[in-house]
Image (cartoon, rainbow, N blue to C red; front, top):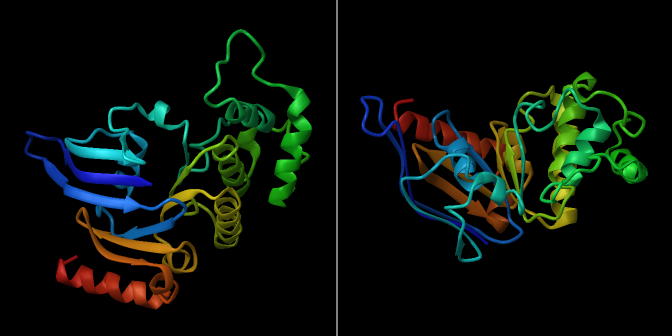
Length: 257
């Protein structure tokens, strides 16, 4: 179980541009839940992910996994149980390395490197099979530079890399936003498959309301650092894109945005 307890987040404290985004914010994500998060710009969606991942500090409160605080852990320490896929297809991969080298780096996450080769070609066939399962024609591109792949192919490899080692939490930061509609559908289907097969707890921020309605078993809508809509289970499954859009427009009118 992942829990944010009474979290306070202040940007630029003590300055004229100070912004208190979260104030005593609490959220619990149950083991195995796939949570989709929507909301307008500045609502706190990405900050929520950054707080979970430890990439930004908090001014108060705590972040806990199974009741144990991880708030003081560095982001690289949290990565032992957490994988993240970013909006930019190039952010989760190394463009100047080959596909094989990228997969090898991901496969060694959390391990001591030492003075040995980072690439073990004996595992190449295993990587090839993982790529073949993506059904994107990547199985024959192990020696191709990552930077030469299409955005969708890179995002698929980034998703694979994020989940290669055992982990519990998958963080998805608008990971289809930079892709064309057809490729975005492919990546979302792959995402859903990975989450289900590995039994992961997933939190996905998206601006695509149809994806928010179609995927996951819980939906959150955020506004100004608060959760203004929270539906799970059967209630979530009964929520359509039109329902989400209606709620979004209503909140925008109430807030003057």
